[in-house]
Image (cartoon, rainbow, N blue to C red; front, side, top):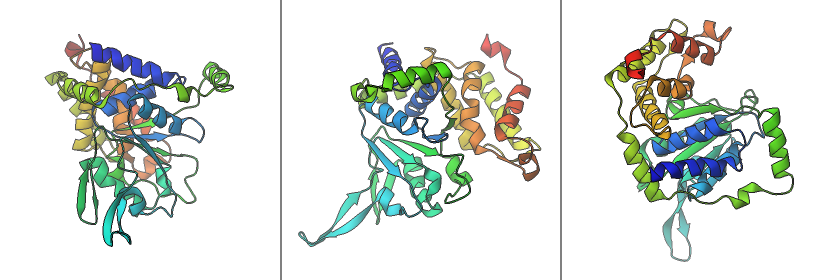
Length: 314
């Protein structure tokens, strides 16, 4: 329970800087506890970078940021072997991926070759530079951002294989009038980020991860999750359904949602809370369906048609 209290303090600490982002903070914590990565999508100026920086600072983690542009090379991400004239030998210079929280800013502006340089590190938690493999220091988490407005010039949409490696995708909306008014007043004279304190340590995160994995998933909940997954594959308007990796991600995210609420078992409400963030970005509509609907609309239709296991909820 002491560690759960720390998670609440972590949320409160990040909320000092990010106003009205409780859901996004919850999902970031769930992703951290389950070793997943997050894709943030929103227009410029909504606090995506600040969210990543504040989150890293509050977990006492190292934070690094890559601003992706079309001329960024894979070696700019992973690192290089360079020749040191003083020692007359090659030395390893690790890239910005060697950190705890990596912010991949505007990832869709990078070329496919550079985007793929993140695949190994996101999936295997290791990076290979000229044949030399290095393991990442835990916790390790990629928070990537992309701008849904600039989709025509100088961008390269993420392929399905890379989207599938993101544990969650979050659409960061504009703040409400009250939240924006509070933000303007808070940031007008001071910068709350400078006062953010480290709330939780790496060892405590490891302990929390072990506890989350023990969260019980009843057989009815497993069948409910698989029914949702199957519906995405069989739906007439969906060309590419959810993968087995997506099914595992949904189970783990549901465990995280239950754990944050102080329960050691998953209920259907936990699944419904995280399902859209976990699954929607992994699906692709048929050409005909994409002309009239969005993937979020169709996914919510699926979620409403799959029978909820009432006994498990009770």
